[in-house]
Length: 351
Image (cartoon, rainbow, N blue to C red; front, side, top):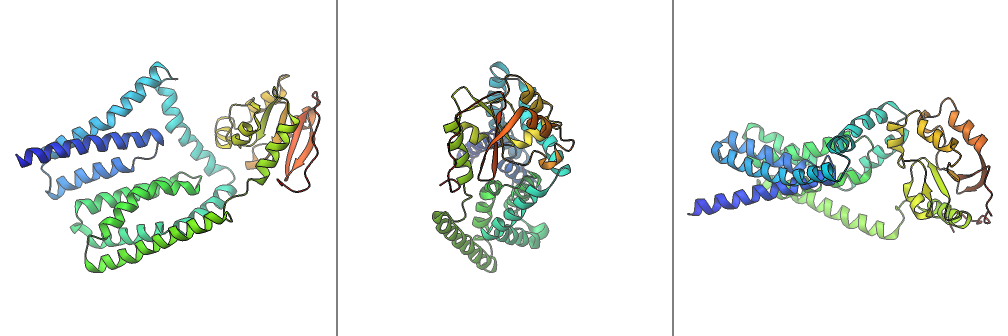
């Protein structure tokens, strides 16, 4: 009777684990960490003899059923009401593969700056310390490692690779590691006395880092300034009419939304533009069109990433637009065929 109840409980947990793991993938395509953990735990438990193959097969089936339910619902929705499975796959994985090639082959200046910051955040937050201690302890266990150790280690390694292979190196990528690090910290506390001492030091370091980070963040000193964004948005709101349109070179879709203007170019983020419009064919066509954007905001140099080496975009901007303002170092252009009442510039940037 007890065995039957336990098996029923395990099946429910396997089903729930599959549902949650699949849901994570639908939120962000690389969040496979929990499914990696579950799969490795099943395989390792079977290999170590702590779980019968028949039981492992049944649990794996329930896990797979949990995974397939959200995926099937999403596939049905995107097929019936959305753009289709092919478009969904391309958006989630095909584009990311092409974008990775773009990042690796174009100028690496911005990703390198973010990678350095990501490294500092990893060390300062204790991510590197905790991950290093856990993987080091488990490596010493060698072939004696228990299934849980192997599964948590696999989850950690997958998360680290996922963060590294993202290639853009934004600080929030580290969020993916939180579940694995939580499991690692808890598991360290259940091992030998010497390991528990390491665990205590590591956990205290992470806790102190979190308290310090929150204290510093509350002062706003490390928060990137949005004065330039706010100044440009305020100026555009004052100068533009409600029917005006805009293109930002490059990225900053938040600026377009906050200014309340209409975008006339579909690639609002810089990476999709660099990947899907590498010759700027669509962008130049949008600017050349007689119903093209009223405003052009040159947030970056028009030849960023050497994307306009031949100067076609720069020449087109020079002939179709005129510079009307420079706000916090950001140049704003107005279409030559359009007149607008231009507001006075503020003396201080964003103030």
